[in-house]
Picture 1 (cartoon, rainbow, N blue to C red):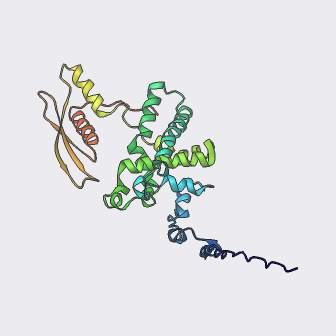
Picture 2 (cartoon, rainbow, N blue to C red; picture 1 turned 135 degrees about the vertical axis):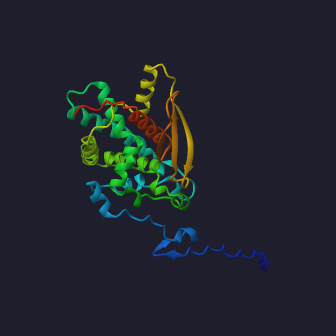
Length: 277
């Protein structure tokens, strides 16, 4: 019996295997996601240890000190305010007020609320904080963008005062109330114990003196402004009816007005009240 030959079934050729993607190039044993990621990150210049010696405090978390010294103009890319000193300045402002209030309360047990308030205002004002900043050479370690640096930002009262407050805030977070009170005491107590300042500012005294004599409110007039924008000098005169004008100079218009008022008071022989003790 003859067998029928088996029919041959044509088989389709198998598709070539899928291409396997090449393994990503490795840099130091790790895959590089992109060329930019392989580049080393730019590191900020560290604050010199001598600065911590000047303030008498060693930070456990150096990132806090780094943030306290960083102006927003120094931040690359999107300028997130949280990366600058501004948040720490907010905290430091309130810590400074609390610690100095505590210092004043202990140092002047006979002072009433009004005197303590005036002493406090004198010690926490921008000019006082800027003076403290200059004493610790704070301007040399502030991180500024090129434009702000070229504009003289390291000597600007507002920046010096704000960074000084931010530094207080950073110490408070890093070391707590005790550490911040020790730093503030070290830097502010000499100013608290300094020779007395007028109980009231010169403009207030002159206005009260004029009103007591039936004169109008003193008139202040800016007569000259000179110097660069980042460090100007103002010349201001103060005028009262039937009185010769008096002049004052200052690095701000307000300071020049105070100087002019003080000059008129001195010329008129008006004695200013002073803090007791």
